[in-house]
Length: 46
Image (cartoon, rainbow, N blue to C red; front, side, top):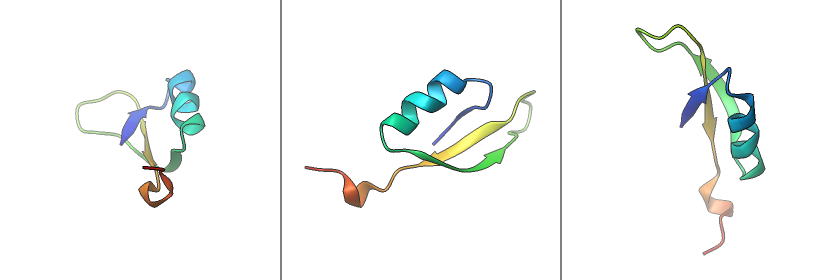
């Protein structure tokens, strides 16, 4: 998933829930970079 790089509070919220940054991208037509994040679902409890 991704979220806007300027949204540091939101990035922190995702990190506290197990996501971690894996890259950055600037989508076509946008004026800001996005942080691409992932979460290892094999570690999620049922």
